[in-house]
Image 1 (cartoon, rainbow, N blue to C red):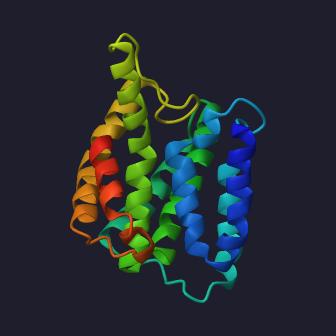
Image 2 (cartoon, rainbow, N blue to C red):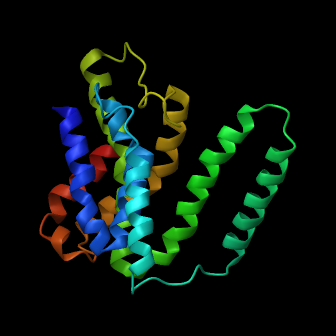
Length: 213
């Protein structure tokens, strides 16, 4: 059932992505950070869900009328130079496994460059902000409840086969999003999120983000 639910969410999002490409960016961040398919046990575990969403977003981007140019800022220039640098070092690498790592990193950088093309304005930025905080914070909330129920007798692991699979990696990721979770909780309590569909649930969402924090 969990596999079917995850695949239903992924494939169900494609029509919305084709209509509004920026939703594809949100879906890609959710899959890339939370790695929900790794919480299943069947076909969804190894299904290329991130690639499916990214491909839909790229197709929609071609026809999008609300896209912007990649901003030429200090950060984007440095990120572009970094991409060139790791491409050169990978070409001269002795280990053949370096090319597999390069491919993975370049896919991430591609979607990172496309993010400001489609994510701009208060509402879209807030959606991305909340997706990032909740995707990682989910494991803090889930792991915290588990630790309390088991008396802290077990380690808390992230989703297997992901960047946050190890307990230390997950801990570092949680520390990085702690400020986001706290700010999100405060903004919900103060009703300053700026997303009408979420404003009606401001109080419970505020308490939820405080609980994750």
